[in-house]
Length: 320
Length: 320
Image 1 (cartoon, one colour):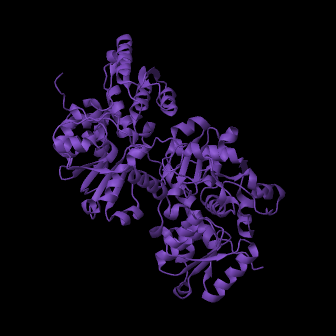
Image 2 (image 1 turned 180 degrees about the vertical axis):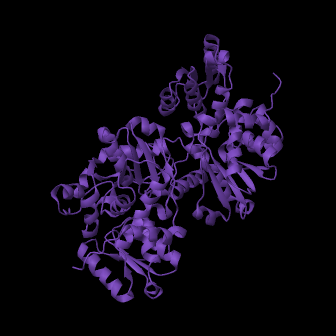
Image 3 (image 1 turned 45 degrees about the vertical axis):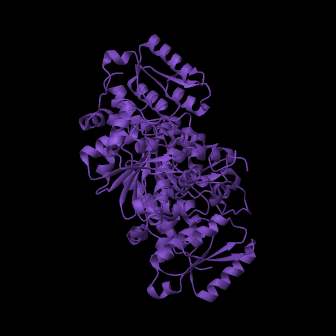
């Protein structure tokens, strides 16, 4: 295994300058109703309004625009059936270089179309991990493309760190910040920025109870990975890796969990009251805040709304 | 019939100052995707993010906070089963005065709860117009409350005019502005402001084909009222009245219509691409822009997103 390259806050600052022409400085929204309900002051950083509909555009743009001209020519590649896939296709299209995404043939049609919509090339594998890896190795051998991992990559983590950098500029005197946790890319970026630039802010992560491997990892003191957990928060099924574990294990105050019903209720409440479309993963922080009022009451809390890519024909509160 | 009192732009300016502490200066959003799709530059004024979820808070607050102390004591009353009802309850609660809303017993539970949620009193009538009017007359006789009509009221129109006043401050060089039209309160407020403060901006209104009484009125040169039109855009079923006809007939360049399917498609597209929850009425302008590209291409167009109050359990693109 290769030596870990740990990104620094200087990398976040450089990333921010590099990606600024390609991303939105997303707004921070508040809700007097949700403040009253929780007893906290909540500040929602709306990455659902980000390019390609999720914070992933930050890390993907940082990786893509940081490549040398020579390296960039061969393009980029990744395996993902989530927001990272379309974000990487978006970033590559902005730079005018090829992007190949390996996705299981069973992935939702909307996810495939998002990649194609940004001009990405889609290569389908069988659903198994072994097929995915074999197909991906072929793609890289054939194209020479640069692999951009969805989260276990210092360029990606530095890019995600620009989100909480904006948040701390947009909101004064935050006491805590909370993000949903899957592979830990956003949480690691948050740790990187906050531990350097605003070390008094406590960092929380929010995880589905049905996919609580990060929670159990933090308690156990080492990475625990689950096999194919089932949760409505489909962005949060992946496990921590070495680089994200580095940050999570050192800087996260606590990881709190919520049930499927609690996540869906928080998602619906956000749509109803804030009039914004957020995906299930983005609702996990509000769900754990509603569940743990003692932890958050009377505090100024930044919440990362990670994305808004939802299949509007299959909402989790309607019967299918 | 009493003499018409026509509000002036000075009334809009006074309204803006009066209501500023009680409403949001809502943001203007853009979408590069929708700009490409339409060939226009679209600027969405997000009144779905307004207090009580719709622009109606502006007119209601202007009426409520403009009352003398003596008059205010007896409270306000209206008949409405839409956004004006909850907006008036919101405004009255802010001032600490009573609010009574007469609603047909058949109105959706969510609409009733919105009024009650702001502390309003709900009085139910039978669904017929005659019952509604009789019950409303009783309420006024009993309470002495001030009647605030949903749109045929100079105080309400002056309040709605503050929306396009903000829009023209937020966006430079608009060529046109377009709002959905039902009773014509928002359109009249837009006419009032734009004709005085930015007379080069063309004013369009967008109407469901299934409830195109304003369109036919404009063509005929007099008010035409339909009996109980059926459309998914439930905020747009009501007819023009004398005061709104005054503005619409003088200042509206054209009224364009869209089918139910076109309205639903534009609504879903807005949710998908802009990640905001808008109600069907708010989608009518985008629907007519998509349908009439020649009219809007290469122009800078302000679109009033009038509200975001939707029953999330009954979305128009899902089977019931």
